[in-house]
Image: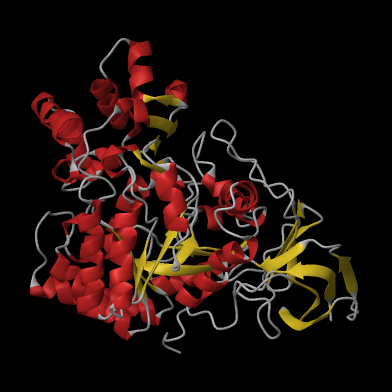
Length: 531
């Protein structure tokens, strides 16, 4: 064996009570799990009672571009993540053609930046996965993004797809899964994915289910109409026969305070009826997105240039303002925006840096203007490439949902901007520090199972997510008394404390608390892919 970790308290990913073992690693796999003090190997790490767990699986990640631009990926390695799922919220960079890629580079700059000189040398899902395999710090799975697929087949128009366009979308989804994608995502508050009718989603999900994948939607509302939006996704799953994984399954905004039990009853009733459903959440109250996401869908129809033209028109501005501030736009989850709750946390231009870290309302007061005007002017100046935090969550909802039997963890973390949401660096240690050690919402073994074994089952990873002989040696060693998320909203790019070692495919990515720079990760592909 290459490495032996001795005297570890093993949380094996099943939820079973912790037990003291030696764990041996060889040829990238867990070679043996044995009684404590019995194994020897080329290198011995004395755990001394630290907890050894499977590497954490980030079920909702936005590292699609930054993982390639900065493959050492310290944000995830330092918090014990060894696998993440990309292609989220219906918008990512494969499959694309040249026109769609250019549009996505603009639309997603607030999520992923648009690094100058970056080599965009793929167009297909398979090509993107091959690019990941050149060398990345963690393993990565991918979901075909439904919004991107709609761009290719329909464009940016708000209308039902024709039969020919629907067939084209089904072909694109099928090709993506046969090239290795694990399923399909949607972003049903983002254009143009939100233009899809329920029946369109059902048809696409039939293809996904037939090819062994699952559907992971950011559904139509997390505010007003949230329960109806969740119910629509369950209906899509029932009608299509496709497994459902609800992305960042939160109940936000004032209209949903205390309503998590209503969501959980909806899920439990569907599960009792035989539906295959799981979900993920992040352990924070604020959400994050790009600032233009708050616009009503009609204001973004036609793409970037059409949106900017509307924002430049006085009459259209007033129409948009009324939708955002008074009636509640679909982009803002049907809830009138409270500008005190919307904090700009990333800009593209240095002359707008003074806006970062302040609410739109606060910056408007400082500048002697109205919040809506500052909002519109910033979007125009930044060509929509601005990100924001939305302070709209409720602690009682967060805690109730994370207790659910199908819960998994997802960071939903953006890695770019001056002050990205700290969940990008802190999600997994925060679960173990705040919700296990401090609040006791979950016990440690159960929490580890949420973050590892359950997620691996949803991804159909037959050899990951457990500390078991023969499984891939994706492992994290941590001190349960000191593991802590140190990332804050003021200083978000901070590595976790209390994690000593992380192994990815048997290679040390974090050694004695220090990143090694190893690039031992690779793409994890749909077992049903074409060979």
